[in-house]
Length: 181
Image (cartoon, rainbow, N blue to C red; front, side, top):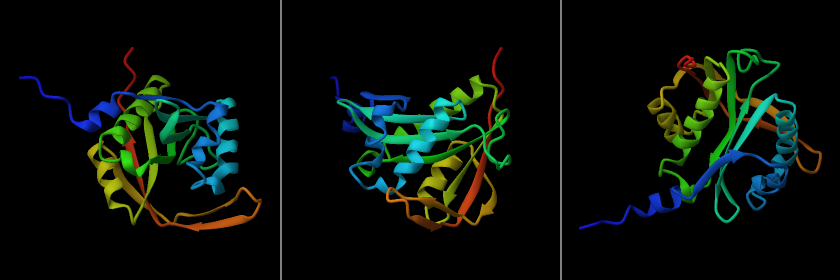
């Protein structure tokens, strides 16, 4: 007797993990929910064009973005990303309807494999102290808390107004396996 795969595997097998294209920028706003990050998305895309970052999306056909993960290769804060050995993951989110099905872990694995191929040895990320579910995922995937981060930063929203963010976080790090020759 043959049994059908669980429903979540049906859609998961149709997801494509790929780099962000310029035509994706408005879709990163998730129907307006993240419109306030429009300038951040545009700046991140420009950094990707310059080779300073890598932007990943999870696309469910037809053309629906259901996840995103950004990797900063270079940063003014070398403890986050130094362009050679250490990279920083940020802007990582999966739409709520698609969580807890393995998509986030799959996206992280693809990003880590790409970093290993590029010769990176460490990857860091911040996770909100109020997000224990995400922290458990990262720990399950080999990340360890290395310090606290005050999580204070600011940005210009889509209207050019400065927004202040205060989200205390745990800084987590993973040592990547060496690139096989």
